[in-house]
Image: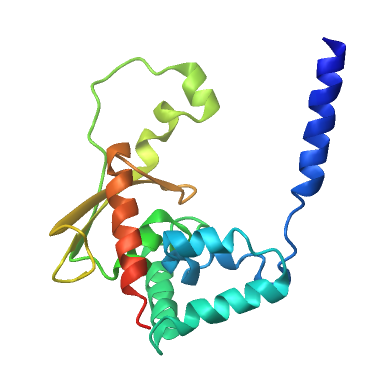
Length: 199
């Protein structure tokens, strides 16, 4: 038993030493940028193999060369829109799911901000409130419903995409309300990324 534990620890240490973080220098955070939202699945796989600043620079140059001439300016304009209209609390709109939707899919055909449906009166759970759980957050949540259509977003894999995003008013953090939508969103994001390639 003790020998097995020593072997497992030794293997874990060896693996962690080989899996040293890549030193991407000034490009270390590029993969979380608005431009990187447009990486296709294949490009994300390529990016995951990049391990030096020079490789990152080459990858990004190739990535940008595959896009239209005004790609960078268009993305920056969408970032400004996301930050102007979708920032909540201290969280910039472009750093949220709502911002990613706007940046990748363009201006929605419609967007509404709603209060969550009222729940039946119940005794609050003191432990949930102490933890900042749902009972504590109900009054500070907004629901953003964003609708995209092929008319406004030609790359959509379906005629219409309705996305409901729950947003915590205090922090600006958001999440998709219906986890079943995740695959549809992934498909829409991949389609938009592929449509951005013009080479």
